[in-house]
Image (cartoon, rainbow, N blue to C red; front, side):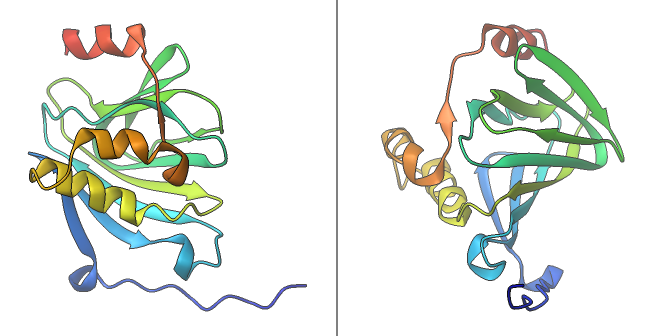
Length: 163
């Protein structure tokens, strides 16, 4: 049996809040370095009309979504599901997925990766790109490091165009 981990407590006033686009906030809660690589978690707060995350997949982690408020559209493979408040979804490794607030709605979701992936620097990179301090090319170059692999999804493109 391994040594027990220490509790991970993040006070709201102490959490780092980043923005990867206007109307999109990412609150950093716990990364793999504080959870013994068990999980990484953040809160995604998406205003109505924001783009959300484009289609991508992870090779090593399952990504969990729990909707705290609003409605979140999520691509899972070739299917789009709408998650409402208190709905939960687990996306397994290798499955293309994307997410954004449902049309005419905002979304507030808890997002968890397990095992932990050391993703906070990825979110910081997205924040720097949004502020014009880094390039989209840097995101592409970071795919292996952050296990975030972008893919094309005609289904997702069509759904977002309709929204």
